Image 1 (cartoon, rainbow, N blue to C red):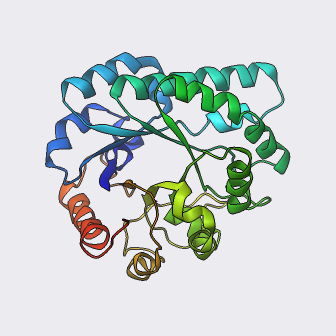
Image 2: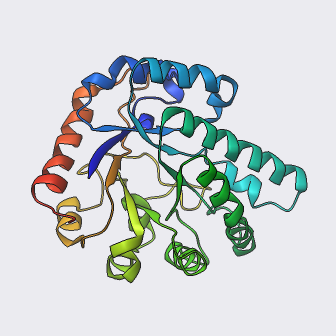
Image 3: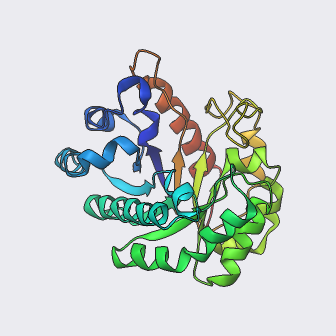
Length: 276
């Protein structure tokens, strides 16, 4: 298993989504590699982002696709879906340029309806084909949804696509009350191939159902991570990403704080846990 750090821990609105901060700090960060968080600001400078990260020898193992793609692909309008596919392809292309072999994808959106979720699932065959052509494994994540539940959505995708694997996110699973559901599922052992770790306050953002902010570090919120890791059954996941940010209101980044959390995950997942 490799311990990765999301670039979203360093790059945010407060520092203008400055991707060069990744190049500047990546050698100080005690991780095996990085998960690139694709933000909308990257569309106009994709080749610049790819060039800088490759020249800086930043090891990008995984890419987290831009989250608004989901809404566009789930709408009825042909132009919206066309734009969603264009953005999806751009995300795939950047991942390929950087050598990522996994892509985390929000297939549905908690603000929308079961019909929107169904339309997203119906498009999956096309999305899998695009990702596969560019050498990437598309991993649907268990983000919040009212009906069907996140686990039911994952179960539907798994039944339709026998080779499909998934990303398990601790914060999303906790807010939906589905940590134990995933752990007890037969899908856990051979279909969960990537993990996301972060904490939260226990509340969602008013007016944005299912959205949990601020994103906290393990131990700062409501999730008992010692108990969670003790209870976590073996799975085939060979990558785990820390998503908890360290960006201050002035845009500066707290690398020592980031490394303290990464050391905690190293101890829990590499010293005390075996996924063999």
